[in-house]
Amino acid sequence: MSTKTASKKNGAVKFNTISQIFIGGKWKTAATAKTIEVRNPATLDLLGSVPNCTKEDVDAAVGAAKKAQRDWWKTPGVEKAAMLHEVARRIRAMEHELFTTLSLESGKPLWEAKDCIEWVAACFDYYAEVGRASHGNSIPPVAHHQVNFTIKEPYGVVAAIAPFNFPLLLMSWKVAPALAAGNTVVAKPPSPNPLSNLLLAKAYEALPPGVVNVITGSGSSAGELLINHPGVDLIAFTGSTEVGRHIASVAGQQLKKINLELGGIDPFIVCEDADLDIAVPGVAWARLLNAGQVCTSSKRIYVVRKIAEEFMRRVVQYVRTLKVGDPSDYTTDVGPMINESALNTVEDQVSRLLEKEKARILTGGRRIAPHGLKGWFLEPTVLGNVRHGGIATTEEIFGPVLALIAVKDVNEAIKLANDSEFGLGASIYTKNLEYAMRAMENIKAGTFWINDPLTDNDAGPFGGMRHSGVGRELGEEGLDAFREPKHVHLDYVMEKKNFWYPYSQRGDLKPKK
Ligand code: NAP
Ligand code: MG
Image (tube, rainbow, N blue to C red; front, side, top):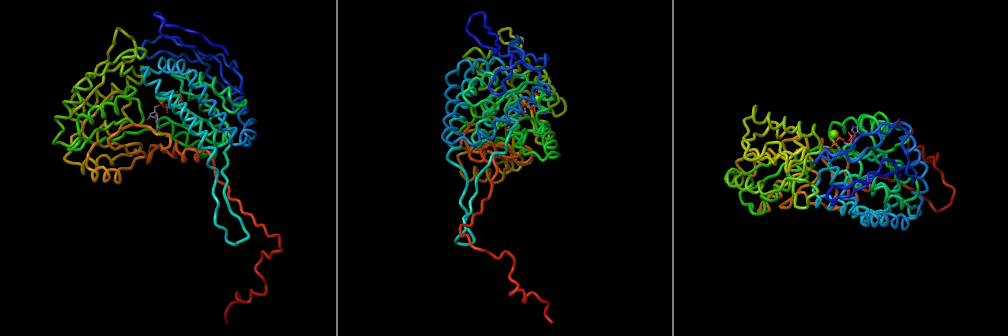
């Protein structure tokens, strides 16, 4: 494997950048000399370069996956499970290297990056067990000498494509269940931060050659070649609704299977009875985690008017206590955004909100350079006087911007929360069970959090309703996304059978005179 070791001047941060791709169980130099630079979004330091893979590499990766698929599928479940557990063990063994790399290339604070790695390992452990335990159903036969059952078969080769905001975690939500179901995978990480996924491939060395292959490159070239490749049977994608729509149309033409996790503008309701000591940190977490670059972050906060002033005052106070800074500093809460264009987009959205919709900045709103860092930092921003139906509720603001909308009561909050083309997640803070259940029933969302937003559970399905996606990841549903049922009918009585309706009885069918 070709790697470059870099270290920070103070010696605190060490990482390896891998400049090769992983195909057929081997590290290979890509066919192309074209590369993509990877930079630290906090400092703009160059971390490394990865190949911008072309057709030759994509063909080789899909070919290796295809070659390995049947043997992998036929590997006994106990052995498959042992290998997936071994992948998890290796991930934990190189946890430090993985979370350091993830933090450096993504701008995630160290604690958040470490948390991601734990969830990635847990995902492989989870699907090792679930994949082994669940296979199909026995079905009631129509005659006593018949046996009917289903088995679940893999689709074949899965193209797994992940976004920049959780490049490793969301890749594991695809790779682990796809493997547990008997598929093989070609993984394409996002181009702003592909290094941790290449590092993760060291753990895939525990699997037979070709079972997982990792290529790099931009969505418009390597990604496009991969989704169009005739050897790919299923595309598992997380990313923007725009690219998701494009993938759905390509897959539609080729009748490929898809699983799409897309964008969201999630609502968050704060009722008049909410305990603000809990709800205020809750909303800041739900909106500012990963500098607001989370698909399920709470992008529209509906607060009941009676408590709105007090809530806003306390949110502002709380947000000002968060430490924005170098992700490599273990005291940092919020890091930079991923790149300049992401920051420009959010700044443009905020200025339109201020100028056209008369929103008010309650705190934040400026580009900052904590400790003189050159990266893409936006001060955590709280906006008041935001109106439903405007920019904050119709455009996905993918950055640290908390938009507060005052509403008359919980019923108005529920009505507005459900007034969206998206349906990814939704949250509520209340002690009133009736409010919580009424909101849950009336808001279209793949996940509904009550008094505990944005918490994960591998065993629970995750995904979006409406334009937020097609299908589900995680849970048993996330395993079924990667396999299809085959109905088996068996008649164990070997006797001659008249399939055709007996002539002796066809008299009934003659037209009645
Ligand atoms: P994106 O621009 O849609 O890209 C996602 C991935 O698709 C990247 O790996 C990208 O490669 C690749 N890609 C782009 N164009 C492609 C094409 N034509 N063919 C094949 N692959 C292509 O999304 P992003 O900016 O990375 O992530 C932010 C978005 O993801 C937000 O909208 C967010 O809401 C959504 N998201 C959804 C979920 C969910 O579970 N529902 C979770 C996280 C994020 P490049 O990096 O090279 O462009
Ligand atoms: Mg993008």
